Image 1 (cartoon, helix red, strand yellow):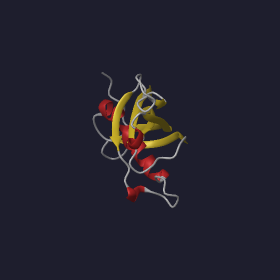
Image 2 (image 1 turned 60 degrees about the vertical axis):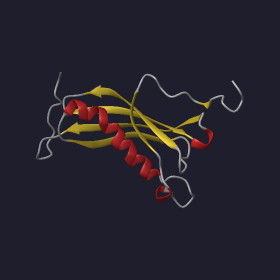
Image 3 (image 1 turned 90 degrees about the vertical axis):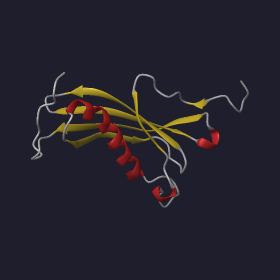
Image 4 (image 1 turned 90 degrees about the horizontal axis):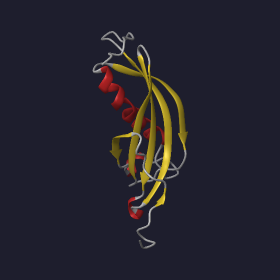
Length: 136
């Protein structure tokens, strides 16, 4: 393998599910020219909801961002891959871990973990009250 094609950085996870991919655009940058952290947080919330939505099969709400760590800046044009896993299913709540990896498209084999978060979602009825998570 030549030096140019040799992967650097980290490997993408194989023990979590790929739930979303997105490329941030110039409109998503902050004053420093990096992608705005709030934009990344919104994408993590969307990605984190994918697995709970399969269980709930109805309304749900994000009730907590238990942990959120920005590890590396995200750049315009990076391919962001969001990997998720359910870590806890309660009576009405589901807790999910999300890891975000950036692949720098100018250096296709350069992958870095940019963000990790833990979020909790609650199943709700039409009036917004917590409701039990359906069991298979």
